[in-house]
Length: 191
Image 1 (tube, rainbow, N blue to C red):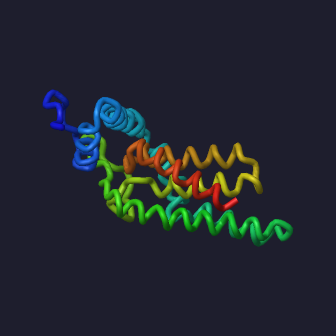
Image 2: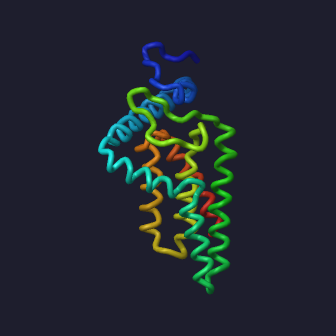
Image 3: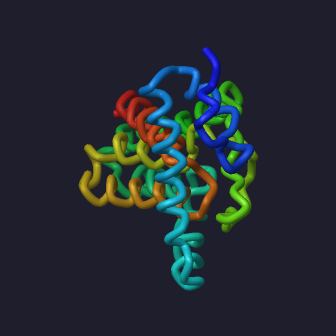
């Protein structure tokens, strides 16, 4: 099915392949592709005050390689002796979710956003975008740790971590949604 020539091409190489695929998928897929890029632009364009960008960048960096979530799980296992087996299972699940995410990234191979008018605000360890590892590990942790800690704060931090990646220009919203979904499934298995 040919791409509708009246649809303007996306403004970045990262979305070009994924958008082309979605545009061929019919009206629902086309709507998702259009909304994805529009939402990305809307969120990323709010990242202007340098102080806010620095604060979000620092917060987001705690999620690199699932560090904050793995540290929380290991701390729980160390200090909560009666529930140590639950903590160990949960932290193992978070680690496995993080590792499995890289397998998925290598299957999908979607490139990170590259928009000339909205450049990325941080460097990333890989050029691959889908699904978001920050989102995967954060939602895996929120789900796996929620029997052990209050769920509300866990999910609030997981959501902020995921959104920080769009704000900083290194993920599309669909990367975040896919990561949150995959992470929740992985976290459920670790409870």
